[in-house]
Image 1 (tube, one colour):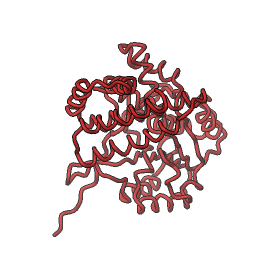
Image 2 (cartoon, one colour; image 1 turned 30 degrees about the horizontal axis):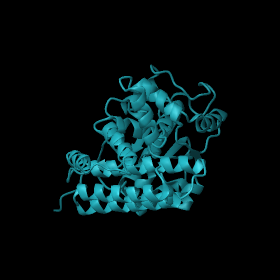
Image 3 (tube, one colour; image 1 turned 180 degrees about the vertical axis):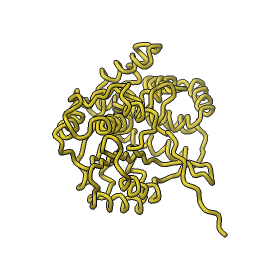
Image 4 (cartoon, helix red, strand yellow; image 1 turned 135 degrees about the vertical axis):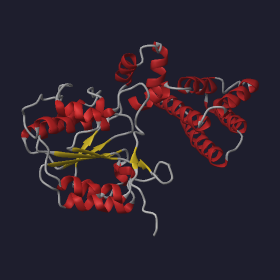
Length: 352
């Protein structure tokens, strides 16, 4: 008899060391408009049966989803709770959601396959089909069942079709919260059956304030650098702050500043440093690209000429780092190529 496959074990791939998980987070930073839309719908007693919560990674999609879930499980679709959807931390529903043990909440994520021990590459149809059984159960004490799909971008075709079938025949007193970083890639029929909540990148002042609260040991300069490089994502800023993120970000800025007169020994020393860091070259390439994007944008606002040359450099660097990562090439050659391209652009178009 063939061995029966074991169900995947869910892991918290979105947990950041030293920071509360989104289900434990009571603060929603910089997303007041989306939260207000959700609050009006919930407190009116007529919420949609599915929300598509969209936005870049790390801007608060999961935090908002758990905020909605806590409110529904504590107060139902009513105006009994606060208009900001907050639920007191000691409330039984909040305690159970924070612990991941509320019977009225189901979270679907990519899991670790028990047979291989590896993180699954997709959110499988088997996981999505759990929704039917979950929504078919008797409602909990609060009368509602809430499911979070985190993220719909991870679904394969079969899983997407299974989710669509559920959306076509939605159960009563059930809420589906679908998270997506790239909603344009989802089936149009899934998008059309969900009410959309758009979350925006956070402004740098919000990011710096949150970093000061969460990471008080960082200097003001480090917080400003993280806020600039994170692209409006608190999650990205927190991940950058761990390990070698701040150091790599600083080296990316320095490489651009010295592009006109690069120091080759320092360049080789940087390549050696990067090679000792897990995914170091990939991360450094992302920092370098982000730093160039910000500088090009700043020059565009002041109508500086010859920006097309720097845009070309940005495109070439993206291809260079991607090729090096894919083929496991020498980081030193990659950095030399990057500096050569930036140096030429500096001579022809001026520094950024």
